[in-house]
Length: 188
Image (cartoon, rainbow, N blue to C red):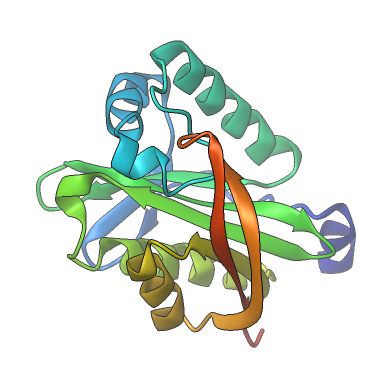
């Protein structure tokens, strides 16, 4: 069964909440759209991603949520809202998307007020471990060179720098910027 899933690049695990020490990672809901639109529209957030526009209108965010929910059922994408279990505050988003050849791409962003508290590392680690439990062990990620903190998060997770640098287009900045690629191979 695992080979069949890997060939389809499907990661059709249960759709529930993933728990870490401090966080809950749950599927996105339409009710999250106003918060997601507000936070992801901040230039300091959108500029450090490839795919988030700034501003990021609520209707666009609603479409993204519905698309990710469908992609989860169809091809196994796992995009989760990061929630602080202690107070219920929304923190950001973490996700895994199939990239091809059995490799999955990790991405994340956090609300500006939540930077520097280890949330990106904890949420990403929780999602990577969840994927590993379901037979997914090859990952890629990247970061814009002007955001070295994101590179440090990936290093803490065990990602290795490929040495490859490229200019990656960011919708949030409407320009390309220097980007580093990283990979992670976990033991099954």
